[in-house]
Image (tube, rainbow, N blue to C red; front, side, top):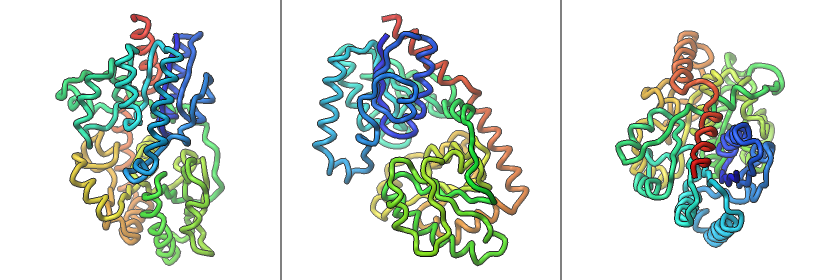
Length: 370
């Protein structure tokens, strides 16, 4: 059978690649055509576009690239019509994929949505589009299920694919010595918020003999040029910039300071003590507080419904507060032991390995029924 997949960012590329392997195991002769990244390309098939060509972040960038986005949507629709897949599999990326779901549904294609969009956090009105245009919705967090059911959907849950991905990882060392991982995010506004704080944090750590010998390593997002990070570093800074090694860095780090996102959940599954920091300009942050309707911003805290690690938001994410939390994470044995226990509970809640294979099997059987 023919499967057309669309992933628009690094985390979607990662999860879609495991799903593709599962589809190949179920349907060895299948054809795979996709919008995605290097992880999906490594599985094989025909890559239509790389997500680096299509990713846009924030309303300003969307407005500035409106013509390009419309062009990509039009191209994708024509490509679907020409290729005529047996199944369209949309992986997160709701801004683009909701529009494709509506088109594909109207054209009579079977539409699967893998990794349900986080409409429970904001833009809840989008749930009506999911009800109308998606044949099967796959959730990867157990706390989402009741919310979707209350809104007229019956999602399917087979576990979290990140558990699979981490289990498959072959870790490589990233230098030597004690390490603090710094993850500033992958969006320009995230770097603008966190990188200056990391520089100020470096000065405070240098002045503390208990922490001065820890390496400070920024795990750079592969979608951004190193120069984007380097512009924030003063001459003589000992902060290291390492691209494309986020998981290796998190695995080796003694603690991590992380902009909220998939990386925070990765750190939790890897057992890395962490503090999450997030902020933006005053107007954007105020709007987010008004529209985001969840008690925590971190997926691990949401899954366990309690703050197993600190979230420092906006003004709370000062270099002084970050340093205080790092002291606790690195030097307080009781804190580390409690966090390790919480991380194990999180792993149990998210299920074991095989989530991607189970979802792929379900997609295969649903497609074969057409």
